[in-house]
Length: 287
Image 1 (cartoon, rainbow, N blue to C red):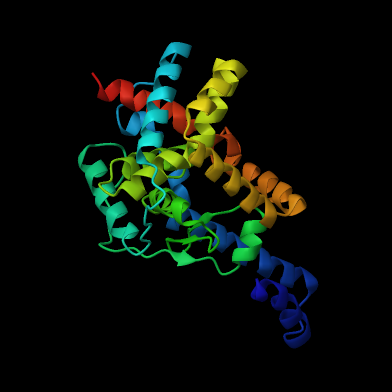
Image 2: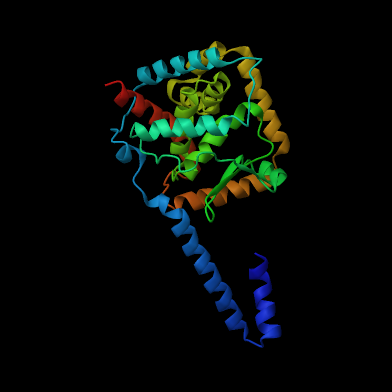
């Protein structure tokens, strides 16, 4: 960024070049950055989707099937919650890597991990990331991922697993959520397991209210343990207190354009695609 801003002054003042030359130089530089992005990681947007990679048929669940899944999910969420859970962030990487190794062996459409240990970096501008609601990011140029330093302990395992999916070449956000859910909920660590279930809580809730109706949604909410509901409210207030509405809206708009421009037709709505992926996988896996 400094180079882009400084080059025109350098070319015109020091090298006595024309303005057109300076603009062309910046344009060429940006073009190579664009090429670098796609060669290093961006080509993952062009790969086939989860259904083709894992040979899983698409699945259109009816209301009864969605209801059955939602209530099973609620039982699992309630059962894995613990007030005394210990979220060991130092242990999370090894658990997640082991989980993805198992998925690769099961032909679930994701590459096997290529590092024994992968330590995520903390975002350099954490306060700014929190203002725009970003909890993690994939750095495509050097294939590394970063996590927001404000992440709460119970969210850390699932967000780590989500970003790790991106590291393994998963570009679609809904698919990254899906793999995070599968890896975390299959973990032997109860705290990691809860994080996996809780991470998709709002997606499940939205589907229940939107598809099954408000009455069913209210009934579903009452079935969830009060401690989890309180945790969800606390999380919402926590992130809202850090968020800047103007910057958040701008970031959402730009990121939506970015996703749509890279073959993710649903844009930011792709995050919620996790529910459909879980239902399709469970239906196929049960046969």
